[in-house]
Length: 414
Image (cartoon, rainbow, N blue to C red; front, side, top):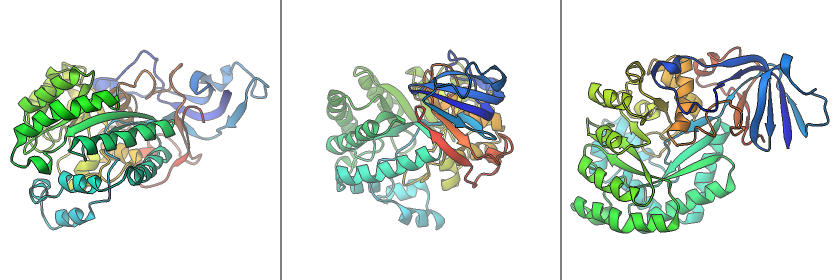
């Protein structure tokens, strides 16, 4: 299948295919071509350039399809590298608790938070979970997401964690959107192990991990390394055990306190460390000296009223910065990556160019997918967003933060 997209107002987010991420102030620039064309062959980008140099006539019978995108900006799809979209029910009751002044930690101590979601998930069928997760994923794709990471972590037992990972596998089989599965059995201590955290860590290592590895259903491992959850020592034990099964770490770190999660992640060559609302000078210096992606989740800060992660400072330190949605029922119930890009500008004071790179090429890097996604590059997957023709320029996209600006989304050229 050979498809031509012609008369593109601006083709944006162009990089050499060899570029896997942008570090520090490399994020300041977005390369674009005005009045452009793009050719996709069998779901991959074959060629692009200025319409003046389009190598084949738009009327040629060579093409199976021709799309005239006159007046539209085209960008790569978003790469959402941190989500929890497989869950049962919702937690709007805790939303009211937060309004009434309870903190995230207080809600968790009262049996809410992650344990609340684990209780609901244990009683939900695979069919129910699949129906709801499929609806959420369709929303994400409609709003421009072309590659997404989905975590387990609301199971907290071997049976329920495998149930979540089975749903993620089914989503992968159904959708052309690229999906990375992450095992997050160490999201919290399961109720059956209340007061016995070290035994729960043993259970994750000796029971959950081997079962997940036998099924082959997770690419990454994650641990919630933070105040009131898992210690750096426990985190190290889990990710070292996971590495024996071929799972690379992605760590929840420094959301609630200076937890040592960044240090553990960098020491173990984590693909990313995520949250970072409490990251300081030491953490940023370590990240700048590594290839670990600093993934920040402004949707959680917005929803919980927490400080925003220090994105501008991380860029000044020469870190690789990504932004992701953290879509989950308790702390960030939204998968709108356009809104995340806007929050990057409005609340984290990133330039539109920096925010764009954080939700595209660097988001892909945080999933190990930047050889396929995150930029307009020859041989990458032809997954891109077509914006409505009235969008005047690229800065309007994060500026008009609540406006539906997407005309269509192409996944694998379709």
